[in-house]
Length: 320
Image 1 (cartoon, helix red, strand yellow):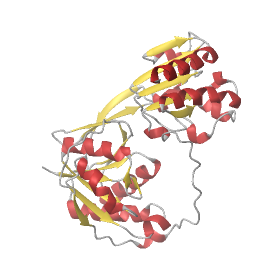
Image 2 (tube, one colour):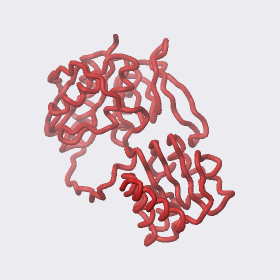
Image 3 (cartoon, one colour):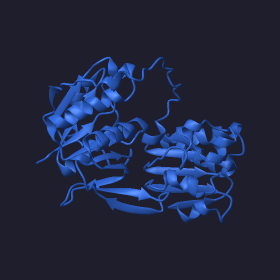
Image 4 (cartoon, one colour):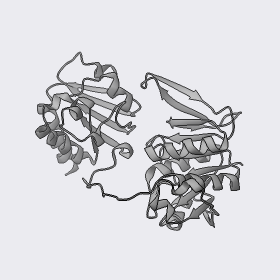
């Protein structure tokens, strides 16, 4: 069976969930070979092997931390040349998409971004995508070269499938461009204790109907009762009620959780484009004619200031 390269997203050896999802998808089309780079790369092997990696290629160098994405592209290209894979899978983060695009240019291959599913095809992997602001679902494949595919978080359930996970050192020679852009400073993001928005299984978002920054605590309380991430519509962000980093939509972040709860959000196409692939969608809005109700699995017509606190209390009581 052909090998499939999987780029590992990890933090000091702790493998992030989107990578485990990629391993599940990679097993559908071949044998996963993971590529782990940077500090703690060797410590990823156990988790990767548990989820199907037959081999783990590792390399650590100061360049991965001190410079932007080019050193990682150099390493992934080295892995590609060593393995000759049937496909290369990368998490669909901002950095992941840049790495994938640069690799595709270097190896002369086509690229598919933001895939939501992956299956084997007679002429190569077939990816499912959402198109035209999630109004359509398409299936596509790369027609030239080795497919380079980025996959959105929460596109596949994580499945354990123990494999060898043999660790091998990857030989990497950095290009002249690898040190062209240096990282001069870092500021740690303030932790809220909530899941990362794009990776969360549950997202609770608030919109114009929240009617002020001081009222977003209602949305946060519901999110905390569910162990969810907090999102916001563009209207709420533009009004200064919530940080832009939490914006869900075409000009914000794209999410695909198991459960998406929209409170006080009308459902404009700009917002729908960022959450329409959610598995189950619930909307709370006092306007029965709001466009969001055309999209949802469950809708509650009511004032969010009445409905959301009651829902929060009910969830807390059921959790004991």
